[in-house]
Image (cartoon, rainbow, N blue to C red; front, side):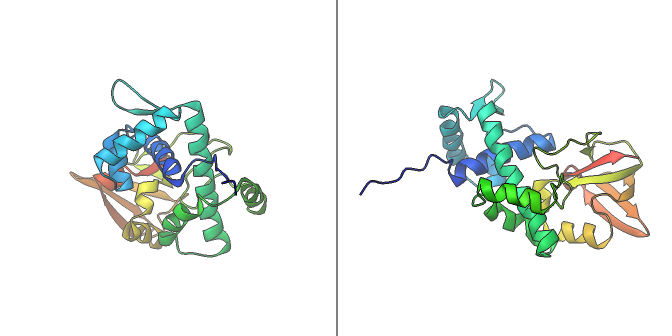
Length: 221
């Protein structure tokens, strides 16, 4: 019996590529050390994985050691990210899953949604442009104003645009932001301290250390 050989990228390949794209979105240099942190893999394992991606033309290792997506690598990364964020919309909008559990579940779904199902999801969900966390869905209409990290803005009044992929995995922070009305689309006041920021809205307060504030993206009012 002849063996059927799949030419589809492996789940590991897709995770590497999506994580590079995720780091780019957050303005974090996509170094192998950052991939190791995000994926929970050893440095040697990540170096080997990146080398394989370079061999098949998905990434290029730059002189400054950052990882750059090739056109083929970016296309695949956006392909996976789109399925991930469409899955998040389905899980929240249709199934009513709590936000603090959605990101983790979508990480599983993104690898098994076929292109045919993706097209049907886009149609069924009304061609959404953002995930439930406010992240742009690749291929949708771009925002008029590029959001910036909460830690990088000088504005005292901002609208929360989206929550980064990394912070979506922090159940406690997600619940705090949701329960206190400081979710995507909400206007909040920003107070800066020595080690973080304090957000205020409608009498509610959320305090974020700098490391978390870097992962919330906002636009100035």
